[in-house]
Image (cartoon, rainbow, N blue to C red; front, side, top):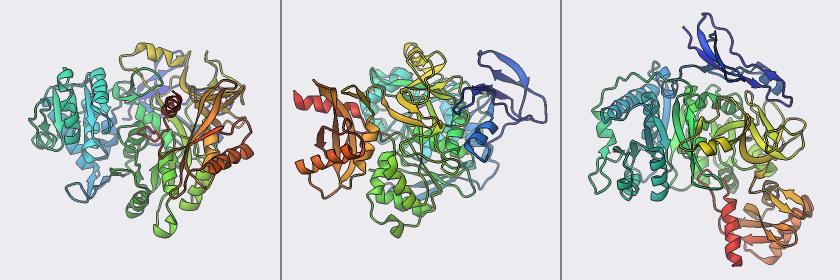
Length: 603
């Protein structure tokens, strides 16, 4: 008997706004499932057989959109989907873990889905034995590692809510997230445990800490050993019978104002991601695929753009934690393990572009590379074709509503500077502040229509921010852009990143892309700084390629480079040479920090 399905009504994600229902293909047996209409009413409808692939092959983008059907079970559990359903194949490989030279243990470990199913069952039993119950929050403060994956599987099978935490967070950042989420348990290593010792007495809800490096009785940081507790637990566990809308995950995202907000996602978020993974990875999966990303699994890009969707499809994932991202090591890793699919943040790609003669030094088998977070630009696209023999597919999304726009070079032309078109299944538009759709070519808010399976449930403990995120039935991303007549979206900037100069609105991405085409520039970021005459003027912060020296002559050369290639009003009237740029953990430029740096230099 097939699983019952939830239906998300939507509209054609192409240029027009004609309403259409994305229904699954009928299954052989009549059951009931919940159909969610645009009026948000639920009614019983015939059931349909669950299919593992969201995208069907087609002859064109329009054809793929027309064929698309959401397949979302009414009752669905991430842990069961990504792990237990494959455990019946005892040799099916799930994870390859490559340790760093300074880490103890074998250099490479391999885990099957059956291994992970057994280990996650044992961890779920251990958590239950210590009083962690369904609906409670479990912090996961670990790098890319087998224990991290097991913790996520166990948390979802238990019906708890996972709270991934970045290992570079300091004590203050951890205290806010653990306190706001009311985490009842934390799984970490000795490095995380040392940070928790500073704040443990201010976390009254935290009743259990498991340490992957063994038990600790230190003051303020008492912890049980992760492996010791798992080792003595039973390896059979009955997963929670969760609804697709039941909460599964809180990922904290920093906005432009106020403290970080916890985006609460339901179990369905994984299924909502699938079109946005399959599309830019050229109809993933294909035979022989192996996925890797340098992005940490604490962020949505590493966790739900790579790890979980790969395992939904039964595709193995390579895990490795760089002490510091090294572009040559990245090439070596991809070649040594035969990586076929990669999610690479733009910053990583820019660093890899600086490696000399990679094709002569390493033989790679990469089939697809996806990237998002910053506009790639024509230079990086050309480098990707020359280096890997493929077009890097840029995509777009955010923690609250991810992978809704993207490219698929095998299906449609890729326009340099464009994020792509709406991923099949999602309705994306440019709207004004009131939520009214704007015509093609108009500048406005990038927005996504609800309901949508990839969309967050709400901000944890923050109903006001949840309400402010929407204008009617449109989720406002906080980014601005333009859609062209062919349906391609062009990112202009975060609303607070757009530069207003002399009556013009200037998006930083285009200027940055132009600067990166200059042979002296390794990295560049552009912001607006106060100007009495123009309101703002464009200022560029530039990191030069190794071995080059900053000079006034080079600054003028860069200004003329932009002026002659873009427009006179867009060139940077100031150029500051810096050793590095402030980045988020996911590789996005923190332009706010650059504006603050500029203010500090003038006071």
